[in-house]
Length: 238
Image (cartoon, rainbow, N blue to C red):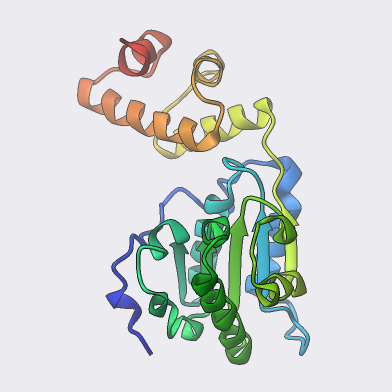
């Protein structure tokens, strides 16, 4: 088994990406399904070992992978979250031995659509995970049949397990999520400020959270509250 500690990858989980901080009313059922997948109420012989989660960019797929690992850790289970954006820069052998981890999360499967070697490696990992009765969650930006995966066996494996599609947040949900994440940092964003961020910046949640991080650090550095003039100075000044 390849020691996980030797993986030269960014595997530190964000502290604020949990199931609780995923503020989407329309996707609450997905959260429940993920929790039951990680910790089944009853161990069944035919319990699927795979979970495929898909949706367009910015809907929170990476957030839920991080949240799944955080949840697994509260249950005393081992977990690891990796992205194909990093994995594909390495040898496929980096997947060797991962089947001994209770929960493996792999992000952005669409990035290996044109790479048969990586597709075969993921398929082999899937089989080993099934043999060890562990759990594997994979994300992509489209359904399994629309990803462009050319290895039929891998597509088949993905469709054997659970499949859920994440819906995009509406503007009201984005405001709620943004203000929630701000409160986690000890920052109060009033409605006017939150709406200004949503209307003047990218509406992608990942970009909004990154902007919030920038504002939080700047407000600490300059000892100023996050107001609309402050946002203009930090993010919109030319």
